[in-house]
Image 1 (cartoon, rainbow, N blue to C red):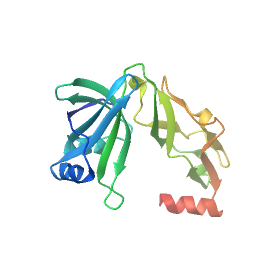
Image 2 (cartoon, helix red, strand yellow):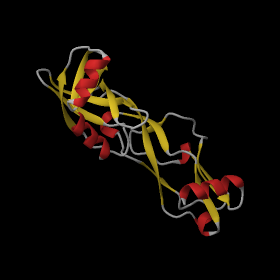
Image 3 (cartoon, one colour):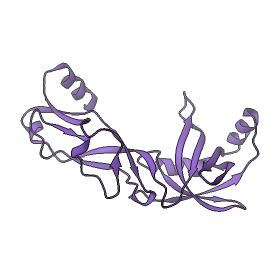
Image 4 (cartoon, rainbow, N blue to C red):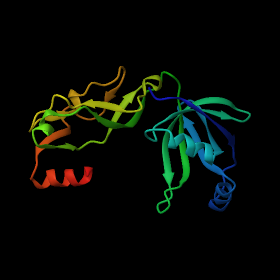
Length: 198
C-alpha cells in the first residue's frame, strides 16, 4: 500500500501572480486544499519537502497528512500538480481533503512481472497501458499495480479485467482494454515497441 507522509503547511492570503512568484523564490509552493464539507484554504508548503515526497513516490497520486499551522492536521489526496512547461518545476499543488471512507481516483503505474513464454519464443512484449486508473479507499491505495505476464504465449493479450488487483482496488475503464500483447517481431508496431524498450 502507498505510504502516508506528513507535510507542514501554512495558510496564505489569496494573492496575485507577482506575490506567488515571490513566494516560490522564498522556497514555498503555493497550494490549496478543498473537499466536500471542508473549508477551502489557500496554503503554502515547503517546496523542498514537497519535491522530496514526489521524488520518493511512484506517481503523483499520493496521500499526505497536511499539518496546517493553527488549523491542525488534515488527511489529503494530492489531486493535481501544475508544472512549469520548460523546466518541469512544480508551480502549484491541489489537495483534496479526505477521510478514510472517501473513495479516490488515482493513476497507478503498471509494472510487468515475470518472463512471458511468448518472448522466449521470439515475440516482442508490447505494453499499451503504463498507468491504470483505479478507484479505492485511501488505506487501499497501492504504489504500483503488478501484472503477471508469465502465462502469455506468442499472440496472447492481457486485458484490464484479467489483472489481479489488490484488495479494495478496482479499475475505472472497461475490462476488455488491452494492457499487454505479445506480438511477432518484424511488424511495424513490434519494431516500434522494441525500439522504445531498447
